[in-house]
Each structure stands twice: as structure tokens, then as C-alpha cells.
Length: 338
Image (cartoon, rainbow, N blue to C red):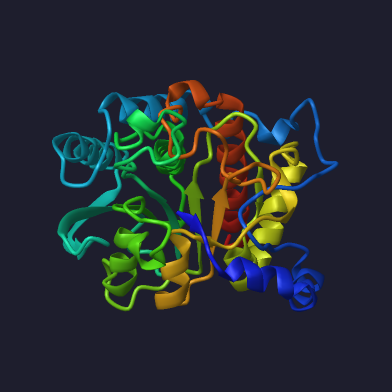
């Protein structure tokens, strides 16, 4: 993913955006960051045993154990089969969407989007997504001799996949009545900074050819880089603009659970990420939970697009914060429907 020129628009339009905040006390501008006074040392009883961070961590580690997951490689295929197998093991209906897309170099690239459907007969749907491919180059690595090598991508993007797999397992085990589509998109990280359309190839394809004709979801939540030490999840600009109430309620939920030091209620950045084509092509209000702090030199953290993005960067407490918050948010949505 990358920051976009729309960040300039985010910085020049504080008054317009503030109107959204008045109506929904939430929203954003770049990619996460900020401050909060909602930190607590002990979690409320309601937060306990909702999400198994050890299980999610193991799912992250198992993806990394396959090696790099560059589209159309043997390790990528093996990991995709494993993800689909886990979804089937949990009892979800699985759809494999295979397609050919064009890279920024003009090459044809076979990709696979993986969809796990919980309660597929339910008409009201929620979309949860993450990308499952890894970057083919370590373009930000401090060692120039290794910039051309692919990265393991423990945080980017195994962390989001690991959290969503655990959520799928938990919801299925609890016989949740929610209609949820778990979308694992391919080829997000094949892009180059000078070409905004070179990113998010799998989600762009899916948003134009969804697995169900005339697909609709009430809202979508994207997880991207949600497992690293010292993560800061700020309000992403397009999330805040197109889904302010989702941003507001989810960040408030995180604060109520004692995770306000991770979920910072302040603007981040405008990001080209997998939620953007879903907003643009399907008009589904979709938010991006992503580690971004404008105080950092590149916003995303020192491990971003480097060989330091391995299991050493993963923090179970961050994984737990994201998983607990999302599970609690989904439980609230289910209770509202009863």
C-alpha cells in the first residue's frame, strides 16, 4: 500500500471533515497515529476470553513458515491452500476466485482471492478482509544488496490473515448468526510508488467481479499490518470520509476495552489500500485498521517493506488488541439484531 496525493486534500479540508466528526466522533486522514487517554492496565471482565491471541499468533507463524508468498509461486499456492483448508475446517463455505490481472510491467499475473462465507444464506452481510500475498522486493531495506529480495511479511500481511482466521474460528464455534464474508485478497503488494493503480490488484478485481452477483455488505473492515510492536492505529482518511460511524464506534469500543493506546483517536493518512477499490466500485462503507504513525519517518514503521518484517516484530498484545476489539464490535452488531 502507499500514501496517496489525496493526503493533501485531507490536510486542506479540516473543516469539511470536522462536520463528519461532529456527527460521528471519529474519522481520519492518512494512516494511523495519535494520542489517547484511554489506556488501562487491566482489561474489563467482558474483554477476557473473547479472542485467543495465541491461536492467532500461530496462524501468523504458519503463514511465515511457508516462506515468501509472492503470487504465482509454489509457496504462495501452498499457503493459499492452507488458508482455504482452515476456513473449511471451521465449517465455512469456501470460494476460490481465480483470475488474471496485469501488473505495472504489463505482465499477466494469475491470482487467487479466497472467500470464506459464514452463514451464507444470511441476507445481511459483513465483509472482513486482508491481503495474503507478500511483497516481492524489500525496497526499504537498509542493506542495498538485499532490496531486490522478497520479504517474509509477518506483519504485512500475515498478521491480518491470522487475526481474521481466529475470528472465523471463534464465530463458527459460537454458532454466530451473523452473515460474514472473510475475503483474503491477492496481489495487494505488487505496486510501485509512481503508479497508484499498480497496488491492490486482487481487491480491485474482486470489487468489479464479486463472488456473488450484485454483492452487498452493510460495511467492511480491512486489517493490514495489525501485529507489530508499538502499533498505532489512527483514523485513515478514506475510512473516515466514507464510513465515519464505523470508525467512531469501533475506536470507541477499543478504548472501552483498554486498547486506546493502540487505537489512537486522531487523523492518520490517506492510503491506497484494499478498502479503496471496494469503496469506489461497490460503494460499501469500508474502513482500514492499519499501523501508521505520521511521527515515523515512513509512517508504517522501520520494518515496513524490509527483511525485518519477520516473526520477531510480531507482538501478541497488539494481535490481542485488534482481535478483541473486532470480536466485541461484531458481538455488538449481532446483539443489535436479536
